[in-house]
Amino acid sequence: MRQLNFHHLYYFWVVAKEGHLTRAAQQLHVSQSALSSQIKQLQEQLGHELFSRDGRSLRLTEVGHLVLEYAESIFNLGSELLALTESGELQRLQRLRIGSVATLSRNFQENFLRPVIGEAKIKLVIRSASLEELLEQLRVHRLDLILSNRAVAADTSTPWRCQQIAEQSVCIVGPPGKAAKTFRFPQNLGTLPLLLPGPNSEIRNQFDLLCEQHGVEVDPYAEVEDMAMLRLLARDSGGLAVVPEVVVQDELESGRLQRYCVLDTVVERFYAITAKRHFELVALKTLLERYQNSPPETPRRDKARKRTR
Image 1 (cartoon, one colour):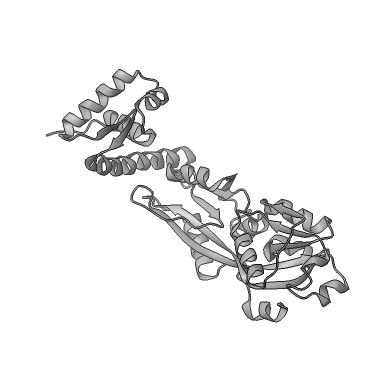
Image 2 (cartoon, rainbow, N blue to C red):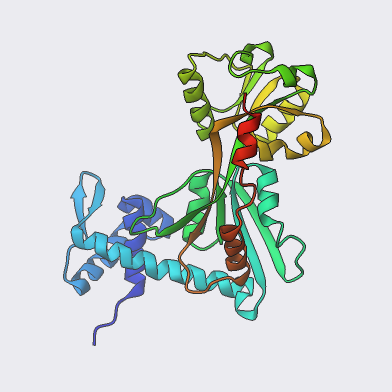
């Protein structure tokens, strides 16, 4: 009975991901000739060519793509097993590792995690990075969940589970006073300096489209990618800011900022991204089920329309 050589398969997996024999050899700390020999032995065992040459690069054959799918499942499952044993999950220690896109609202993160904050049996680990960096950590089971304001699509090698968990209204806020009561959109956009999310933001794209539909050109005073910084500038600059309401919820409640109008066609959507696992975390399952049934910070549309001018 033939047995698969997982050492050879691991070397193939690294080469397939790198697409280059030299880089893979450097990563694995082996010579290029030794790596080539390992790949050749795997091909002989499987009875198929796994790579074809394209200059200095390697391209997967049709069989190579199939073998890569199996390798992804095998080694990701191994990473999950290591993560579970290292974290103590098998001994019922519930460590919840959350990845958050760096530009995501801190208020939203806290609202989402509130049911598990302070729980004695749950240890929270929260990391911030770009979505691409977080997805790589999720792929090898170094994270249990990613909170993002961008959806991701699954494919054969990365079967992400991406569910929308909330939709938050976006509003224009500014200093409290008479101007807030008399503000009209878009006629009064130029009355105060305007702060906008950065050009790569989905909110910004929606806002620009809305302005275009009204035939209005805007010249922002500042463009800010990070929501935490946008919140501070909205509070301290004396200007108008286009922000999701959840970002400035504390300032609105305290009266330091006032809502000028709600942009009814501009929203921010929040997503929970997970990877398929063989061992379901109880805390994570409970958290997602809770917000699936009752999404946090869902905008109240009827109320929002009344405030839109």
